[in-house]
Image (tube, rainbow, N blue to C red; front, side, top):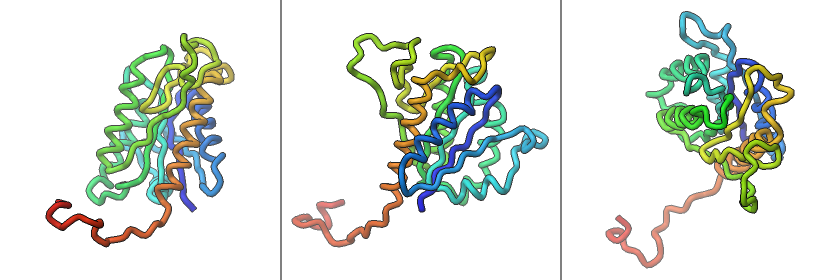
Length: 217
């Protein structure tokens, strides 16, 4: 069965809440095994993230959805420690052709969240992964309801999911329903893509009709 794993770090619980919505979306697709794993500080020793059990789970996954708060314009420190630790699998190309996606949250509507998602994209490309963007929105709205909970993808994050989270507010209040619905949609999209991507379809090596070998070069 195809496996989707959501790997995230959360400071105050807001990104954790968003990860739960992503998990629900991923699990809403039949025929996919879904796991959600949190990066914790206890796994960081002398600045280096280490957890063989989690790495084994990620190695076995067909798709990995990364999530982290945007902290000072980039992924949070623990998530960066994890990313650096994956340098050991760079040369063996263990994650090549796995699917990847990402989500983030921070206080301001922008808050340099795009940079965090770019970090995830660059990381995924370094590992030879294939990125799945976000595809949900309500285009019928002439004036997007940026601060109201009515609009999915209200912040216009197409690379991945962006959410606002007030650091002094409880995760019960933020992210709001619009941002959670965006997380759900991304999780579902990744699961659907994973089923298509892992489908064993025989590829024919027969020449394309009407084309010579030279014309196909």
